[in-house]
Length: 389
Image (cartoon, rainbow, N blue to C red):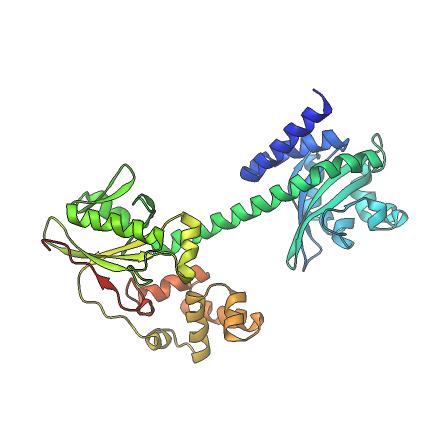
């Protein structure tokens, strides 16, 4: 196989690894072969610590990789030296004095037993929290990092950078999806997230129970279907209008009355996912509308001070709690309240201690338990009358 064909296939494999991270060891082995390296690694470094994590590697001796993770990751040049500019390929002598490197524990106890003499290091991305790095080691047989190795790595580094960023975005999106699912499953109302065609893209536990009963709501070909024709048509039209941004729906949505076969009345609140924080659910799931389905019975929302009294929260702690629910993470809450992130984190720790939960998602569930399925901040909800109801 010619060099150009090898490079083309290797680049394709790099992007495959962005979608399936389990492929990174195989891809790193291919890169090591292409650049005449011995052990390839995809590493992350915490900006607040000297410790480096070898998330993926290929070609390394398992015994020495365990030693690296337990002891030597904090002693190597990447942990102790400035990493250079993003995309810049550096070798050990460009990071530290090579004589000092040879005299250090990292080389004497870890690198020399493996006959390592040099490592090519390139920063793929850096942020305030740390960075991601591609490394390719060289042993005595391959010699120090040379111009040929740099030239070959330069052909691949832009693609590995993009793949690493794509993989990071996918992991974040999956984490968002898991958080949304966890929160929705904790609510008593049945919640369906549907796309413009009425296809169910997510249903929480309560919604799944409604479908299992096979009554007034069911799933047909993956689409949410109501047993009453007029109601079904309304749900389909409303979901399509939400996707198109129809102003007649408004940000507060509409309410559709439903009747079960046993005569019990329900109401479905159809809420478009295009406004404010709700757009995050749209981004995560590809949904255009959320349907909150619950029994049509009188239920009074609890005022925020009831939550405060229940858990003996100070006014500031209650403000932070409600901000976590309405706004999101610590940086956003700190910016909104005009305080330092450390202050928000302090109040968050006290909230965890007083409420007995350990995650922000659980705080959202806690507040949801005191509230109606649709918060009053959404404003008045329109009601659509269905013929015959």
